[in-house]
Length: 204
Image 1 (cartoon, rainbow, N blue to C red):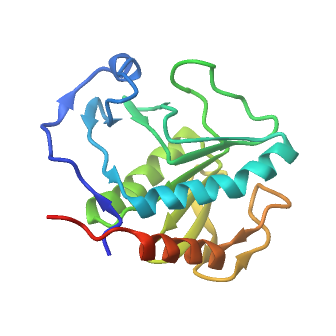
Image 2: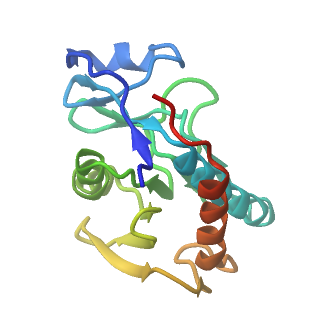
């Protein structure tokens, strides 16, 4: 099944970090080493996954002084790069981003919903892995609807990520960094099965 799609490719565009920060909200793209790179067009299943995860996180955040943010928040990373995680979570006591503009302090947790193309999977699993580690994001979640897998990686003292959760079914009863939060993975897959079943067939 196809979980993501791309718009017609446009030439890579060199861009300064400050110009990327000022791009209008409806102009997509992340900045990688001073070059604007287009993102995949999110699919129905991708967005259903993001909404489900946010719905899971919101009640816990309200009870625990945390804040979950969607994919529109820009993060300024080292090496002239800028990223927009699918979800970002700031735990109690973690510095918050400014009310307006890009964030220069890392969230406690970054979540990426992995798309199905090799290029997108490489970006989320390899490139962003090293970028988010250097930025100092304490936990990195990788949710892969096609592989039906959930991975949680934790930053160690050497600024390297180590796997602390790798699951394909059941319920993660102790989510690292989020005491009291459970992750019912089977429920997520049922939600995505329903989304796939109700999705319209692609038109030519």
